Image 1: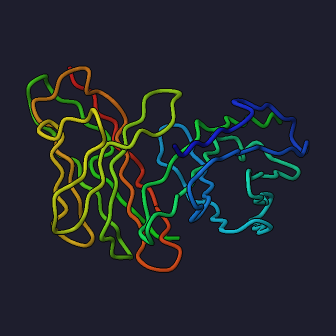
Image 2: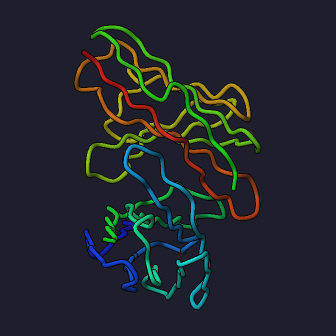
Length: 113
Length: 116
């Protein structure tokens, strides 16, 4: 069974204090690992897709990396506006057809000014 | 990135009435859309997968007669909550997947349903 575990559940940082969020996964044939950001009362906002171990992607203060067992979302010098819940999801591959995403429970990030 | 809209954003209804939620992919075509439900402080729970021109596939435990899904075009899927009850009150989020290439899922802004 596909499984995604995110840690920590909650993280409080001071503005400018860099850190990383973890997403560990077990999946039958990874066909994409996705990071989303969700603000309270809103739908998730797409951030990154990673496909293979060693791949990295960056967007402003965020950088996502991928290994065969986990992904990290690094936040460099965060600002209060980076406060949100960050969700990780995997798409398993099966017989060449895409399947639904399996989501982790998320990491709630709070950046204090 | 691609844009997905949802309407209405908030709805309050009386118990026993039906509510329809629309999900549109504004700048891309989506043969596959998804409907999720989210409870406070919890992650997304997939309710059903909607395929254009065919019947939706429901997840285990989701009543297909209560949550009617129609995907009549490549840009529109609707979720109708029939005979709504207070326990149906929740945050409903749709998602549309791009075709080919990365097949990324983009999410709508969500619909807050309150059943009195």
